[in-house]
Amino acid sequence: MKLALHWKILIGLGLGIVLGLVLNMVGPGVRSAAGPDGLYVAALDFAINLNQLLGDLFKRSLQFIAVPIILFAMILAIGSLGDLKKLGRIGGKTVGIFACTAFSSVAVGLLLVNLIQPGGSRFISPEAREKLMASLQTESASKVMTAAKSVKPWDLAREIIPTNPFDALVRGDMMQVVVFALLLGVGLSLLPRERSAPVFAAIEGLNEAFILIVRGIMHVAPYGVFCLIVPIVANLGFAVLSSLAAYCLTVLLGLAVIQFVIYPTVVKLFSRMTIRDFFKGLAQVQLVAFSSSSSAATLPVTIQTVRDRLGVPADITSFVCAMGAKINMDGTALMQAVATVFLAQFYAIELSMTQQISIVFTAVFSAIGSPGIPSGGMVMLVIVLRSVGVPADGIAMILAVDRVLDMCRTVVNVTGDAAVAVAVAGTESGKPGSAPTAAA
Image (cartoon, rainbow, N blue to C red; front, side):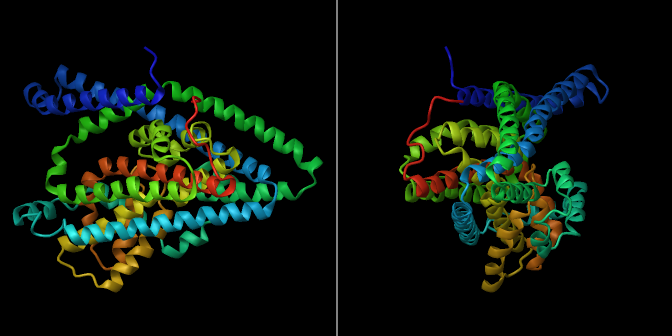
């Protein structure tokens, strides 16, 4: 029986969760019974480490093609648009819709965290509070805070322009790569066609080659997703979520509102695509995003799926999705707003209305600066915490449960990229791909 790719990925994800839970449950017993050097312990560690290695290889293969895909696709998108007025129009629509969804997402997060109050005494007992306070000093939290010391909000705007575009390509700085591709594409578009045509032809050939690589990688996606999820569940389990369950549920509820209310509204307002077709076409992208926890690594799959399965024109797909991989971080912005107020409640710090309004803007702009890697939003969360005087040490609590939440908000982020691509295409052509195709 031939199954669609997204069903194969879903099966791989489910089997990986099952194996991870089994390894998580038998791990403590094996280690206590056999000692740290026992044969069964070595076999357990080998199984976890092998899956970790294979999963990392799959994710690195996606990251490997993310930068060239963005570079070539953006240049070709601008070249195919041709008219710089059209480019400005599409760019304005893209940024405008992204801004509306971002501010709406943060507002939803603040509303929920103030209503539920997950950091209050109703959900965290004095005993649990003492245990959490005792566990705040962790190596991971120290690394996050150290990484954030040199980051200032104004630097986000300053660092948009690369001082060395080739250095930006090497480091994989997605925002600078987008700007480099944008400027190069505009420059080529302004040249006489006989001068720019050979360059565009070469870039188109390279772009098609990388698209073939993406399709090849997607053939092993079910196995890659399986290997990615096994060590996460095996090392984490679900026990760590219990003491912070209210915080986790608040974030997940906010992400659900974005995913199933805000984005479908955008799709319905600006296009003729049905919500069923939209989510059906995006299934495999969401599964890859969930397992990789990286919007940058998922980008090649996002571009291919939005173009082939949602029927959005290639130029709009490349432009919007490449921009979205960096500036559309609605799930991350919501998390930062919820986490900031949650920690304020935990420390019994009263935040004024002015401070909460400032959280809206700080969370939106710091989310844009978040790297598209697993838990990349944690570094920028320190900025939001410090902006309203909440102790950044509390980030250790967030880190304890962030791995699972990061997987969920990455799904939201890539869904937002697709929703805005469909919306922009709808305003340009009236009906961007009314139904998924059989491609991919």
